[in-house]
Structure formats: structure tokens, C-alpha cells
Image (cartoon, rainbow, N blue to C red; front, side, top):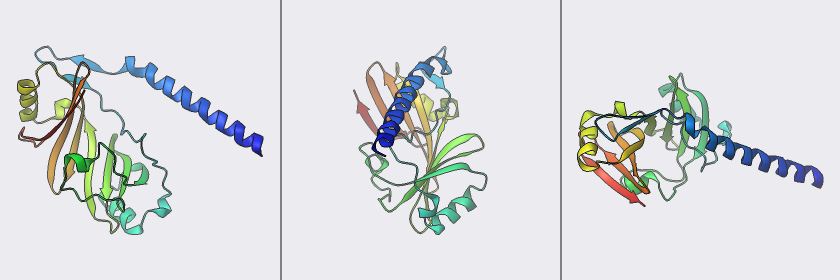
Length: 198
């Protein structure tokens, strides 16, 4: 039995190393095109990053109220994976202190109409928010204008559209060399919050 456990752990380690290597080798296949009149880069939306969270919560462990609410709101959703909300250093509470997320909440990643989404619910099944990755050409024009004006020379590397409390917001990650900036915008181009990481 001990030998079987050792073999299993060794196999999992090999798979993990293989997965890491395969991810780094695919970066040359990304769809990036430099716009001729700006420094904005168009990228294909990446799948939802759930690597830092265990998304293997048994569906039966998710309250029926939460599952029912999700299935009613997103009936065509496929491949749902659930987790309990766990705050992280780069959590939404940091960017949006007024958000009502706590460790009793649940979130789910899923695909709907070929787009990856994340949605949060509280334990009573009340919808909190939904986020999905989009291409920067889907950004409101006012946001693109603000970026070109105030962040010339930066490349857009990721855009997320966020919906909560009936309002859309946009999280835009920019890079210039080693400098990284995360901006949260209203559709009007108003910056809600900015966070710099070098």
C-alpha cells in the first residue's frame, strides 16, 4: 500500500511538471496583433484562471438554493465547477470594499455560449456577481480612449467584464515592461480604482 501511494504521488508530480511545460510552450500560439495607431494589443480571451482555488467541491455539498438559482439564471451553462469563496491578496474586496463577499459564499466557473464565466452566490442562493473575460474590442469606447490618453505605451493583456448590482464594470490589466497595472472602470471611462504592481 505504501508503494502504491509513492507511485501515485510520483505520477502526479510528473503530470504536474508536464502540464507546466505544456503551458509555457503554447504561448507562441496566442492570437496577438499590434494595433497600428495605438499600443493596445488584442488578445483572445483566456479561460478563467482557477489554478489558485480548489474547484472540486462536490456539487452535492453546494446548497440546493444556490444550485437552483444558478440553474434558473444560466440554464445552458455547461461543465460547472464549484468552490467556496476564499479571500486572496488580490481579491475583489480589495478593489471593491463595498462588495458583500465572505467565506460562506459560493462561486462557480462554467461555460455558456462558448464563453467562460465566474458567478458568485450567497448561501441563500442570492446572485452576487458574474465575471467573464472579453477581448478589448468589446470595451466601451470611453475606456479605450481613457487608456490611450492616460496609459500610452501600455499593452492591454486582459479584460474582464463584471456585472453586479445591475452595474457593469471592467477590469483591465495593463503591462509595460515589468510594470503591471490593474484598473477598474465604469463604462463611462471613469476609473474606480487603480492598483500598480512592478
